[in-house]
Image (tube, rainbow, N blue to C red; front, side, top):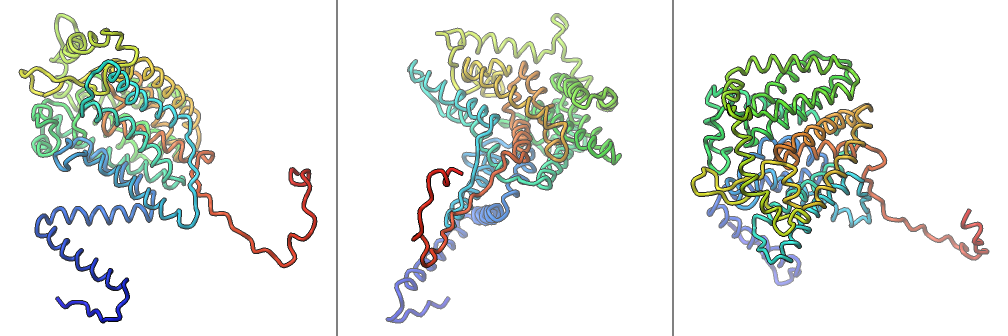
Length: 495
């Protein structure tokens, strides 16, 4: 390698540049020798970040398409601190922030308004982080890293909502987001179906990345957790996309017939989750779609698909029916949930009136050593609301649902990608509101992200909420002799 010839008259800029290049070359060589994978990852990050900064809608496409495929990978398995889909959100945010900073050079100022749904989401995030931790400080309760981790969950949804709303601006871009979501949902549905039937060794393949806390039994129990790592989240993802597909199909005049195959696949994926709550959610979704389009035949047709899917998934259905407790008539898993709520969560809510401002942001407690998993989670969404933020969080959730349902109900009867996204969001909100009686469906990784994306698309494609860049004010040159005439009166200025 030849050295750069530096003459005595070289400028300081040349000298500094040459020194920087030399140090960077040495450093890059050392890093390559130490970890080629790290360098490859850095190159991918730089390329993706540059592409997002150049074409912002790419951020929305990537988040919609990759989140369902990455959400089930545990934190620390591929990356040291973040889950892969969280790292993707950080990358997209950083690239767009860099683009915004670069735009400041020209004097452009983005105009971004906090709409009512985003405001309610922010209120929920505050009530799930600031409020309970202040209450913990007053009670002299230690704030753990688990509390900090859980306190940012809703803030990540705030960032996701704002990012999608800021990057999607046209109907075509909205359609691309929805098409990507449906395509990926089809892939996840196939994986869930094969996993629940335990064929082709899919459950074994998933063990390498998608076993939560390394628990292999979760993947081999006739439940289709697929790439989300949680069967209930997979069912929600299927239901939200089912509503999107029906909305799109309806607006295309019930054509093409290929949509029927997609609808059947999504219904199969829903029931392949092996969750009782999935069947309840499917009924809620069918009723909501019938009410929305004022057509009972749509609900009946989808109900027929559900019956056919149950017959095709007979091994999965049979395995779940066997799990009923003979004495109570309830699924054994539900009895376990009630026991956990009575033993670990409800008593603490009643201590020192913790139900007023919550217990802690963390939605889990350490489990006894005899159990397979290290934690016991709150398996009741409404208990989680009280636990994680008390009465303020419950009130914020109610306001969020009311505002979001009102907006999506109006938009769902409109045309274009906005109407399709609103259909999915409206049905998703009703499904989540009902199923929160069983689990915190609102915050499920993958499905919760999709619900937020659909709400953001409804806002992004609303012309009144579009993000516009305000150009820098231009100064006009003063003509000779200008300004020498009489100044306008106050009435002329007001007019």
